[in-house]
Amino acid sequence: MRKVLVLFSHPKFEKSRANAILVDKIKDKEGVTFHDLYQRYPDFNIDVDAEKALMSAHDIIIFHHPFYWYSCPPLMKQWIDMVLEFGWAYGPNGTALHAKKCLNVITTGGSRALYCEQGTNSFSVKEFLRPFEQTANLCGMQYFPPFAVMGTHKIEDKELHDYAHQYDKLIDLLQQDIALLAVNDFSFLNDIPQLNTEI
Ligand SMILES: Cc1cc2nc3c(=O)[nH]c(=O)nc-3n(C[C@H](O)[C@H](O)[C@H](O)COP(=O)(O)O)c2cc1C
Image (cartoon, rainbow, N blue to C red; front, side, top):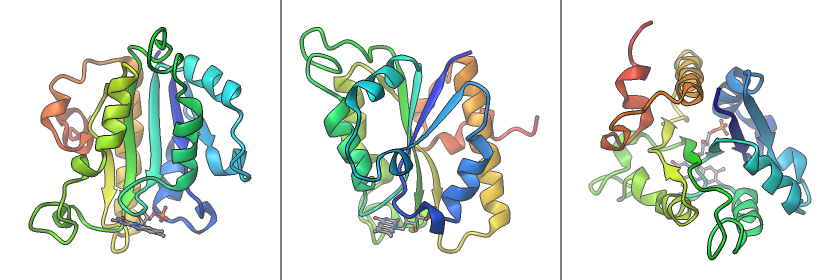
């Protein structure tokens, strides 16, 4: 079974509704390491060696966070800046992450319809996540489309629980290393057929 590392970043997790429901569903799953960055590093003083060891011990890396100003909260950026070192994650001999897989799991206040050229947010989620995609490319990781829970301001708890169930199922698929065939044809992993069958 492939090992999954969930790097979770939420500055106000005690006030969270959407992520609280998602996290509750997957945090104790077998083969999943749930790593709450704000809990572990409230002072932003990241233990780089410990984080590198954690990365090395996992096959699939999930950047799980609410969308804040079209990006991730600051501790996740700090984590990326500190941990993905030259000569380790990229550059000559920087092969530690080669062949790992990674993706973003995000929640957004704005609905899906707002994330397009004609919408208030002008650009797609995929476009906003380009820095993550290219970071993965540079580090030799395979980057998947995001799993996204959108329109969180208006979403009912029941729907959030449905998303949590889908997230749980997605992790099962990733752990089994089922070839997620043609996933890059989809803008969101939410839409892949394997997550939309009732089995
Ligand atoms: C500082 C801040 C910035 C935000 N930026 C965005 C944004 O750029 N796009 C968006 O759709 N929602 C944005 N939101 C809304 C959050 O994404 C939304 O409240 C969150 O995903 C809900 O998850 P939670 O219940 O776990 O907190 C922002 C919220 C805050 C507090």
